[in-house]
Amino acid sequence: MSYDAIMSETVTITGHNRDQVEAYLARPLSAGPHGGVVLIHHMPGYDRQTKEMAVRFATRGYLAIVPNLYYREAPGQDPDDAAAVVRNLGGVPDERLVGDVQGASEYLKGLSNSNQKVGVIGHCSGGRQSFLAACSLELQAAVDCYGAFVSKSPPENSPMKVTGLLHLVPNLSCPLLGLFGKEDSFPTPEEVNDLDNELVKFGKEHEFHSYDGAGHAFFAADRPSYRPEAAVDGWEKIFSFYAKHLS
Image (cartoon, rainbow, N blue to C red; front, side, top):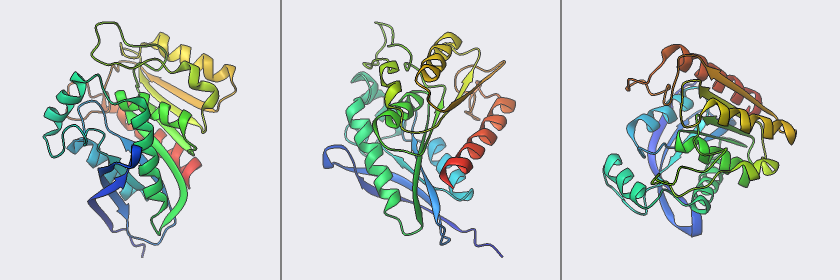
């Protein structure tokens, strides 16, 4: 019989600037070795939904960790309140995000049942940050789920103080999977095409899938935006992609 027990717990990682950052870890207890996944939480924060995704990855045989990107500004606060604090500050600085993802990746690689391969995944703002991390660190796979503001910067009235990332395409370190909704406004299908064209231009391995009838947050099962057909197919593509690059 296979041993399929998992464990989930709160841990502390060493993030950007050697800061001690809270994170949620879910992992198989079998000997492995297992690939690792860093989950970058969305703008609503370090919430139950993202932690449940980590457990889902663990049940599929991955070491999964969610760094709390808002820990410095709002330790111990409700995810909605913490998100409001960080949103008012313009979002998580890109440099800090990269440092925290690096710390989370190193934590996974330090586990005894790691195979030393790590991927990253994010939804919404986390999709942009997943792409940023993959262009800034040496990773083995990256998944961008409808990441906004990759192809261009936010509008002037946006609270998000970030910039577009197309200039980083030459630095992409790993294969990229992109999952998008054709009815999304952030990013629009045109912005997805712009990113696709730039990746082709620089010969970067990637695969993009855009779903009819789906807008932003179509993976979110507890929101009206949920689109089950797109989400089910998206999850299948994520696990197939990671099986290829993280096993």
